[in-house]
Image (tube, rainbow, N blue to C red):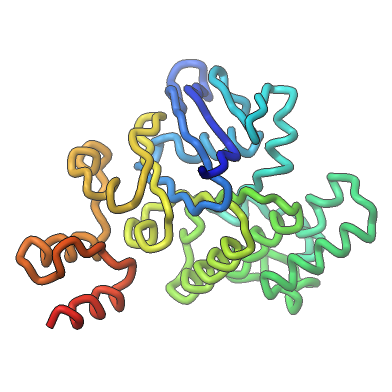
Length: 277
């Protein structure tokens, strides 16, 4: 049985006391999984992340971390376990050099100087940022800034990593590099949660999909199951990933083996079709 590291039950939150950004959101997060969070702008994804990270306290609802209840006084535990990478790197970066930026979080934990230095070196090495350590972050490219923000949370040694639309503003090369980093983080055993509008990436990458709409989680499950729910797709104005759509059209016409699962990549589909010849 999979271990639930975080459970949210009926979370409510309002920024203005009138309209709920979260309106009864419930979701479990499993250790070591790759979860893609989908939904239109304003669906509640970012607000949910900020509650999970401990930045915001829900107005109502229950949050459990490793089975233990998290109240407003225990939010610090969430901050120490769950790190967040914001969509806009400039909203996260505050220091004058890359090394100072990465050291900011561990220093605020009041760790010994040697421990801070060790964490910073590891994070810079992990994200291949050593050549930029003395550079002002504002001089870096968008992709390089994104790597700095990921190094920020690596230095905090969070085991739950939240990424709010990490592919935004990245070029194709930057997206490819980001996905390689995500794969490495997953291989290292971290739990990854990513909000995205890229359905093709979500299908290819995620173990599980959660769909937000109007502050609630309407569905959570295997990518194939969620994306094939036509009513859900219509209600949330999402579209199925292109690869799954093409696969289902081919399957309906008998071009793929009966009972075959849709591959995650075009190369996988090509190989499947080649075996069928």
